[in-house]
Length: 166
Figure (cartoon, one colour):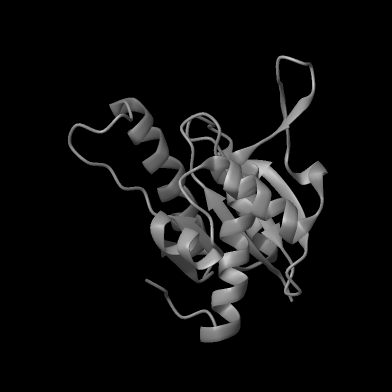
């Protein structure tokens, strides 16, 4: 049995996380849209994938996200969906509001970090390379959200046997 992967697409800081079928965190990797090695790395990761959950990118006129960032977000998302599709891996493409509501988190990134720490209790999966003003390593919301997306797939898969979800 393989793993359930979650992808939080990012222009410069996207993340990929995977959990086992018991809901335990296994690993995390960066998945930025500007990374030319992304397709090959995803293909390597997905050799052990049973399911991929990708956050759906939504853009609207007058939004705060710069156009180039939207292109990079779409690139990392499309590459992941394409690689998974070519390998025959089911994909759940879910809107942010849907998975966040299902897991009880809000738009505030700190709620995602707190929920991931509560579920997985493994801060090493959430440690970023950045430090706060006091010099302490801070939790990475991209890692947290990738783990939560994988967990959403775990919960959804247990209910629907990996049928596509809203």
